[in-house]
Length: 625
Ligand code: FAD
Image 1: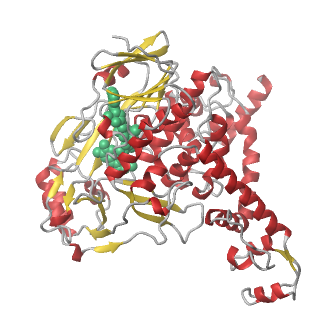
Image 2: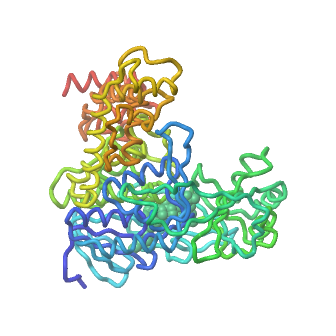
């Protein structure tokens, strides 16, 4: 049966990618349908209940700057907030929140249910409706046909999902949820490169069976940080403690003795796992010289006793899991509420996508999230927002939006995946961004909100708040630049007590702010007239300080970006014949032909493509362009 109404955009999957994708398309005015297995699992965190962290919070703040839901849901569901790397530079500072799983999910569901232009329907999608090389809609498990010119697929770990606990395994999308088998089979008929990856999760433990006196406490920061640019600490629910404990030689002995029944070490699992989130058996095996690994004990929520032991993800048999958990300090009598497990699933080579996240082979079909080879809620949500936005742009007949690497971590993520592909679950790190001093978590709104507004992603409320902040920043920066302190003046004498040598010449307040020993509070009121404007908020002050103190480095990165712009702007035509470029080695030719980069800069980022090869390409393109 055909569903009576037609939609502009259909999103399959209500995880982190799917929820941001459908919200984005709907904010942009498209009639959007979200089709998902189960309305109760909208925004479900499949693994640890935490959002943000190094590299990841940068993505969350960018999603927020573009009007997405993840940061606001974190403010409503966060039960412990910390800023990591506080003593390091602002480029790597990162906010991390422990979330109450239920509150987070409720916040996402509420955002979806209150979003104009968005309808939700609970049903598995089993098939795509395809005419020629274009997708036209989807067919659900009960045979219902929904039509739309753009379909965004965000099926996470569900495609051909297989759950492993020891040598036992069964089909599943994640614990308690069905896999997507019919859709996986259908997708394997399409000319897309598909492979297997795996990820895992630890056993959960009942807090009532844990001896907390044996654990180290770990409290969040005070004042409590916020995730969203529109958020406030007043929105947070009650804040709680987390704990730290460690594995020991006994634990490692138990794990080693169980490896002969490990699906990973007996070859039952073939998919590659996340390098940066390894299972405990992997850690014990790879770092054989270490006799201890740290474990963070994190509450799953305010209304539950369940704990998430972060650091002991495992797919060992359940009897081994009980013994390994009980060997850990504080856990001698622990009761496991859910076993740990690994899951293997299908993912698609992201090199088969355009930079808009539309598949190269099927017009109108977009992929986002874990199915593109990534791991992590934030990575999924970022792709979802971009894919949803580009699906909406396609429906409108507009050009796609593909943020650049110097604009956003979302641009770095898209470029890394689509240019280079991935052979293992990809997660974001600040080290992946070459312009990380410009791409800070504190300035994501200044980098992206205006663009988001132009695209239709940013509503009036966010836009007004952003404009007020930007105006306050501009005004206060100007005042600091225009206010001068003369040597020996009363203001200079106040200042002289704080600086190593008295002022020898006239300085503006802005120049003074560049000094490492002075903060905004030291200089702002030196001329008496700093009746601080109410809009000069903590966020504005932070910007002024970072801009002033890192001005030299920021200018250098901006100059570097201008130099690179020529390569970014040198397009390589889609059907370009790399074999025609004389002097390229066979290896380079093969890499370029496989990846088909669309600009010279992207060609240069491919591993193994040398600067000499880029010069040859540039000369050829100029001669024949
Ligand atoms: P998901 O969150 O998986 O959402 C997919 C959604 O699509 C679900 O709502 C599902 O019901 C729906 N769906 C699927 N197929 C269909 C269909 N045919 N029709 C309708 N609806 C469908 N990340 C980390 O960063 N660190 C970790 O340690 C980690 N461990 C993990 C351990 C496990 C066991 C699992 C399952 C995941 C783990 N992850 C981890 C990954 C993290 O959960 C994902 O990266 C993230 O959830 C991906 O978001 P997504 O939106 O792409 O997919």
